[in-house]
Image (cartoon, helix red, strand yellow):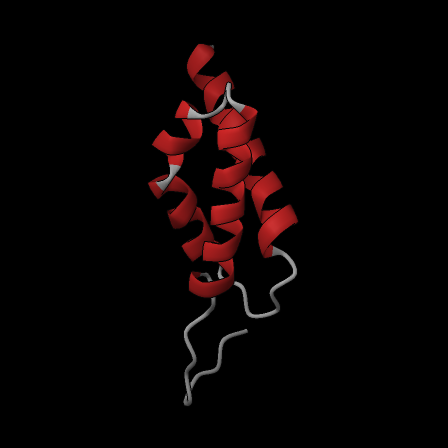
Length: 80
């Protein structure tokens, strides 16, 4: 049961980050966003008890979402 609760908590945190930081970008890539969150999961878990470090990490993620989470442009088969 603990494993299921942890996975559910991860999905809730990921969804919250998508809604607050990534959703405003029209050409967003949710796959790239989830990869970025997975890369930073250890840092997120380490600073969950320190609000200042958590705030800094979330600001860094927001900046990285703006730059690195966009769909690749294609000429022949455009992205939807």
